[in-house]
Image 1 (cartoon, helix red, strand yellow):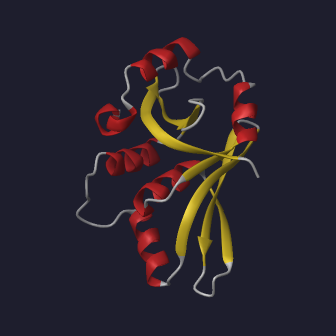
Image 2 (cartoon, one colour; image 1 turned 120 degrees about the vertical axis):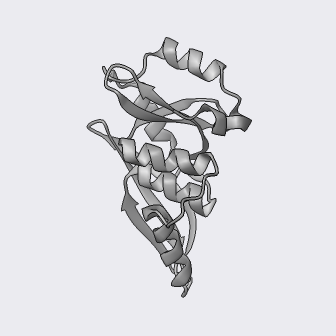
Length: 162
Protein backbone atom coordinates (compact mmCIF):
# COMPACT_ATOMS: atom_id res chain seq x y z
CA UNK A 1 0.00 0.00 0.00
CA UNK A 2 1.59 3.22 -1.17
CA UNK A 3 0.85 6.06 1.25
CA UNK A 4 1.61 9.77 1.40
CA UNK A 5 1.84 11.48 4.78
CA UNK A 6 -0.15 14.70 4.67
CA UNK A 7 -0.65 17.78 6.79
CA UNK A 8 -3.67 20.02 7.04
CA UNK A 9 -2.79 23.25 5.27
CA UNK A 10 -6.00 25.16 5.84
CA UNK A 11 -9.76 25.13 5.74
CA UNK A 12 -11.31 27.40 3.13
CA UNK A 13 -14.83 28.16 2.04
CA UNK A 14 -15.80 27.37 -1.56
CA UNK A 15 -17.47 30.60 -2.62
CA UNK A 16 -19.63 28.92 -5.26
CA UNK A 17 -21.19 26.23 -3.06
CA UNK A 18 -20.55 27.87 0.34
CA UNK A 19 -19.07 24.55 1.46
CA UNK A 20 -15.97 24.21 3.67
CA UNK A 21 -12.97 22.49 2.11
CA UNK A 22 -10.14 21.01 4.15
CA UNK A 23 -6.90 21.24 2.20
CA UNK A 24 -4.35 18.48 2.76
CA UNK A 25 -0.80 18.61 1.40
CA UNK A 26 1.60 15.74 0.74
CA UNK A 27 4.72 16.31 2.86
CA UNK A 28 7.07 15.03 0.14
CA UNK A 29 5.62 16.17 -3.18
CA UNK A 30 3.63 19.23 -2.14
CA UNK A 31 0.57 17.87 -3.95
CA UNK A 32 -2.68 19.11 -2.49
CA UNK A 33 -5.94 17.31 -1.88
CA UNK A 34 -9.01 19.50 -1.28
CA UNK A 35 -11.88 17.62 0.38
CA UNK A 36 -15.33 19.15 0.83
CA UNK A 37 -16.65 18.60 4.33
CA UNK A 38 -19.73 19.54 6.32
CA UNK A 39 -19.74 22.84 8.24
CA UNK A 40 -19.94 21.13 11.64
CA UNK A 41 -16.89 18.95 10.98
CA UNK A 42 -15.03 21.97 9.58
CA UNK A 43 -15.73 23.80 12.85
CA UNK A 44 -14.56 20.84 14.93
CA UNK A 45 -11.33 20.57 12.94
CA UNK A 46 -10.79 24.34 13.17
CA UNK A 47 -11.31 24.29 16.95
CA UNK A 48 -8.54 21.72 17.31
CA UNK A 49 -6.20 23.48 14.86
CA UNK A 50 -6.63 26.72 16.78
CA UNK A 51 -5.87 24.98 20.08
CA UNK A 52 -9.21 25.90 21.61
CA UNK A 53 -10.49 23.64 24.36
CA UNK A 54 -14.27 23.36 24.76
CA UNK A 55 -15.78 23.40 28.24
CA UNK A 56 -17.39 19.99 27.63
CA UNK A 57 -16.11 17.15 25.43
CA UNK A 58 -17.18 17.21 21.81
CA UNK A 59 -18.00 14.02 19.89
CA UNK A 60 -14.46 13.45 18.65
CA UNK A 61 -13.07 14.10 22.13
CA UNK A 62 -15.47 11.48 23.46
CA UNK A 63 -14.24 8.96 20.89
CA UNK A 64 -10.62 9.53 21.95
CA UNK A 65 -11.57 9.19 25.62
CA UNK A 66 -13.39 5.92 24.93
CA UNK A 67 -10.45 4.50 22.98
CA UNK A 68 -8.05 5.35 25.80
CA UNK A 69 -10.43 4.07 28.49
CA UNK A 70 -10.70 0.71 26.74
CA UNK A 71 -6.94 0.71 26.03
CA UNK A 72 -7.16 0.89 22.25
CA UNK A 73 -4.37 2.82 20.56
CA UNK A 74 -5.11 4.84 17.45
CA UNK A 75 -2.02 4.58 15.24
CA UNK A 76 -3.02 6.50 12.11
CA UNK A 77 -5.82 7.46 9.78
CA UNK A 78 -5.81 6.78 6.06
CA UNK A 79 -7.88 8.42 3.36
CA UNK A 80 -7.94 5.36 1.18
CA UNK A 81 -10.45 5.72 -1.63
CA UNK A 82 -12.44 8.08 -3.81
CA UNK A 83 -15.52 6.78 -5.60
CA UNK A 84 -18.26 8.84 -7.26
CA UNK A 85 -16.78 12.03 -5.73
CA UNK A 86 -17.01 10.52 -2.22
CA UNK A 87 -13.85 10.10 -0.15
CA UNK A 88 -13.42 7.15 2.21
CA UNK A 89 -11.16 6.82 5.24
CA UNK A 90 -10.08 4.32 7.86
CA UNK A 91 -9.10 4.58 11.51
CA UNK A 92 -6.21 2.21 12.24
CA UNK A 93 -5.81 1.07 15.80
CA UNK A 94 -4.36 -1.62 18.01
CA UNK A 95 -6.55 -3.45 20.53
CA UNK A 96 -5.37 -4.37 24.03
CA UNK A 97 -4.55 -7.89 22.75
CA UNK A 98 -2.32 -6.31 20.04
CA UNK A 99 -4.70 -7.21 17.22
CA UNK A 100 -5.12 -4.61 14.49
CA UNK A 101 -8.52 -2.99 14.12
CA UNK A 102 -9.58 -0.98 11.07
CA UNK A 103 -12.77 1.09 11.18
CA UNK A 104 -14.41 2.77 8.18
CA UNK A 105 -15.26 6.45 8.62
CA UNK A 106 -15.66 9.75 6.82
CA UNK A 107 -12.44 11.65 6.09
CA UNK A 108 -13.69 14.66 8.06
CA UNK A 109 -14.16 12.51 11.16
CA UNK A 110 -10.83 10.76 10.57
CA UNK A 111 -9.05 14.11 10.36
CA UNK A 112 -10.76 15.49 13.48
CA UNK A 113 -9.93 12.34 15.44
CA UNK A 114 -6.32 12.25 14.17
CA UNK A 115 -5.80 15.83 15.31
CA UNK A 116 -7.10 15.07 18.78
CA UNK A 117 -5.09 11.85 19.08
CA UNK A 118 -2.01 13.46 17.51
CA UNK A 119 -1.54 10.62 15.02
CA UNK A 120 -0.44 10.87 11.38
CA UNK A 121 -2.84 11.33 8.49
CA UNK A 122 -2.06 9.41 5.30
CA UNK A 123 -3.58 9.43 1.84
CA UNK A 124 -3.19 6.57 -0.61
CA UNK A 125 -1.33 7.67 -3.72
CA UNK A 126 -4.16 6.35 -5.87
CA UNK A 127 -6.52 8.84 -4.19
CA UNK A 128 -4.28 11.73 -5.26
CA UNK A 129 -4.23 10.28 -8.79
CA UNK A 130 -8.02 9.89 -8.94
CA UNK A 131 -8.60 13.36 -7.48
CA UNK A 132 -6.31 15.01 -10.04
CA UNK A 133 -8.45 13.52 -12.80
CA UNK A 134 -11.73 14.88 -11.47
CA UNK A 135 -13.50 17.87 -12.93
CA UNK A 136 -15.48 18.94 -9.87
CA UNK A 137 -17.55 21.98 -10.73
CA UNK A 138 -17.79 23.12 -7.13
CA UNK A 139 -14.10 22.61 -6.29
CA UNK A 140 -11.97 25.70 -5.91
CA UNK A 141 -10.31 26.40 -9.26
CA UNK A 142 -6.56 25.79 -9.51
CA UNK A 143 -5.65 29.47 -9.73
CA UNK A 144 -7.62 30.32 -6.56
CA UNK A 145 -6.05 27.36 -4.74
CA UNK A 146 -2.59 28.43 -5.89
CA UNK A 147 -3.18 31.94 -4.50
CA UNK A 148 -4.43 30.53 -1.18
CA UNK A 149 -1.46 28.18 -0.84
CA UNK A 150 1.08 30.88 -1.68
CA UNK A 151 -0.19 32.92 1.27
CA UNK A 152 -0.02 30.04 3.75
CA UNK A 153 2.88 29.27 6.03
CA UNK A 154 2.44 25.55 6.69
CA UNK A 155 3.98 26.03 10.15
CA UNK A 156 1.24 28.51 11.04
CA UNK A 157 -2.00 26.80 9.99
CA UNK A 158 -3.83 28.03 13.07
CA UNK A 159 -3.93 31.57 11.73
CA UNK A 160 -5.51 30.63 8.41
CA UNK A 161 -8.74 28.99 9.45
CA UNK A 162 -12.10 30.12 8.02
